[in-house]
Amino acid sequence: MVATLPPGTDDPGIDGLEALALPEPGMDMFGSLRTGLSRLILNPGWRRVAVLPVDHPLVDPTTVKALVASNERAVIPSYKGKHGHPICLERAIASAIAGGEFGGPTLREVLREVGAVGVDVSDRGVVANCNTPAALSEALRAANSEF
Image (cartoon, rainbow, N blue to C red; front, side):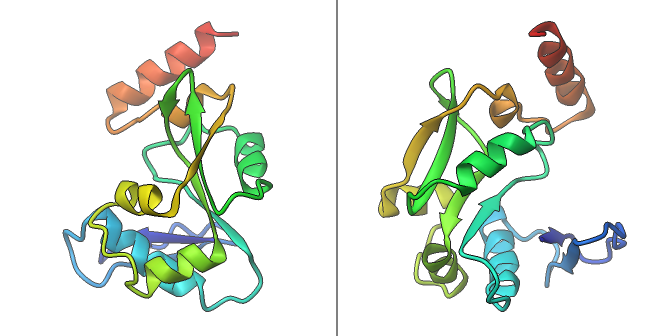
C-alpha cells in the first residue's frame, strides 16, 4: 500500500504502508494520484488497485475486496444511486495514469474515458465524504442509526 502525504508530514509508521511524500506542496488530487501510482507501478506483484481517498474512512473492507475482485477494467461503487469511493482500476489503467497517458485533469474524466462500470453496494461508507471533524461525526451518527 502507498499513501501520498504532503511534504514534511511524518510517516505514520503503519505496517505494510509506504508513506510517500508529495514532491511539492499544494499538489492537486490527480497529481497526488499520479505520484502514488507511479510508485506503486514499480511493484510487479499486483493486478488491480483500489484508490481510497483519506476523506472516506468509513468504507467497509469487504466492499474494497468485492470491488477488487471485479473483472471490470475500472469500477465505481454506488450507494443508493450515488457514486462514491474507492474506485478500483486494473493495472494497465493505473500504469497509463501514472505515465501521463490520461491528461485528466480529474480522475472522473479518466473514468468516463475508460468506461468505468458502476457497482451497487450496500455500504454507506462509500459516499460518506468526511472532509471535516463535523462531517465525520455526522457520518458516524448516520452509520450507527442504520443498525
